[in-house]
Length: 381
Image (cartoon, rainbow, N blue to C red):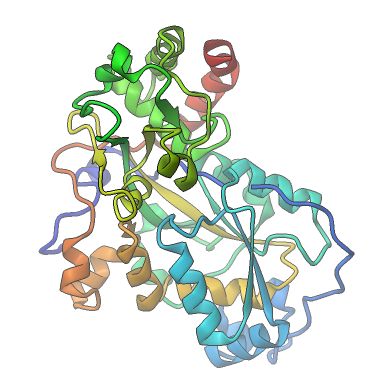
């Protein structure tokens, strides 16, 4: 990929293909849903459409989605990757009501909700998942190729469109400089000054952000993408020192001072600086861990046309630009930079790290996830 702007993951194609991580949900029961997979103009059921062509083109898809009138999303915090603005822009553009359930849930919660609510009007239509959860549940996804599908690098999509990476970022440490000393390294977190103050965004056995946080720490302790054990051992030491805070951080806990140090994606931590001027963000330069999230359509979506229109919007120039404004690097960034469709001021704000970046492959993520499932609870309680 040629561009005048550095790639998010400089050595991605030469080092590893694919991605890591995420965070997101669960939902309660609701009345049964009527059949919502009616035929398109071309005779294809909406739930079986694999491209806008099956609706007779984008205009046909828009009409079908408007007829459904609603879209169910889940685990999309408004301050995460600019989803607040993205949801509003989609709803305003198409006149479709977006129902956003439990924004602070995990990736595994999303899958659980889809299973629990299958056949109901409240089931999630779409998913935004971390790598390990996404690749472990592809049987729940509907194949769909958006109109910009060919612009997306092969490494970042299923060839049939069952899943497509949407945006990426770097693992980081956010901290309130008004409440704790500046964090200059991961080892600083073991110091007495951080007692009861260090939080991890989620459970690494369920949430992509937390998984990548443990991986970043593992690298700093002599581990590797194939050996995450030193990361688990570090968190055990953190707990023993009394520094680990078993609280899932949110904008509310950060604002109140309850979680003054947070290990999370750089774009989520960076969003807090707009509300809390004393909030600083460190991406450890020696141990950069990067990851993309996975976008997919629930094959049992109660609003199949709206789900597909949502995908078209996210991967359009407009949707990708909205992602970029949220401090993440959209998957089509390199193409948009090359053809001039991503504004220069937006492009300059994209996160970049010089040098090698660690991005685990699906096989490495599976192995690390297995280790975490067997050892994390014993380490941190």
